[in-house]
Image 1: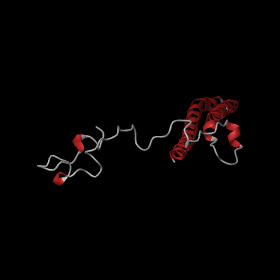
Image 2: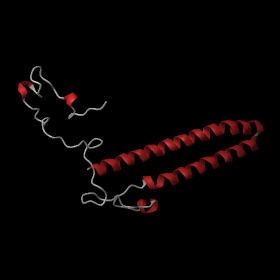
Image 3: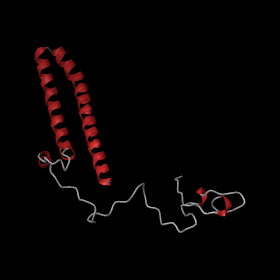
Image 4: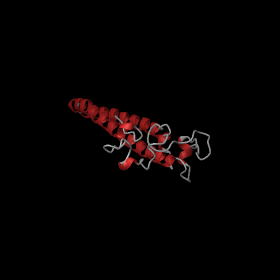
Length: 149
């Protein structure tokens, strides 16, 4: 059930008057008047794209956003995918290198590294993913707040 101040069930009633507020007065907000149709969601609606008063976000690639010294756009959304790919590859190479180094030391140490190193590598990948998602969420919130103004 949602709160709709214009619905008849939410209007305050005074016993015996049958009309809005005590004494038969109408609510100052205009319950007795024709209400415009409700708009979906909360807050003011944004004008459609291309309308005056709304700027289109600049289309920037990852590297051009890096060299945007006016900070008119964020580099994070365009670079996040590349950072995750590079991080995953580096974690994988580190894991393979550790396994090779461990087997060159001893077979037992190599087997332990093979099993527990995979768990550690997955944990590090999860932490990388969580931190990148956190930064991306902060940038998205900032963009949403900026677009509401």
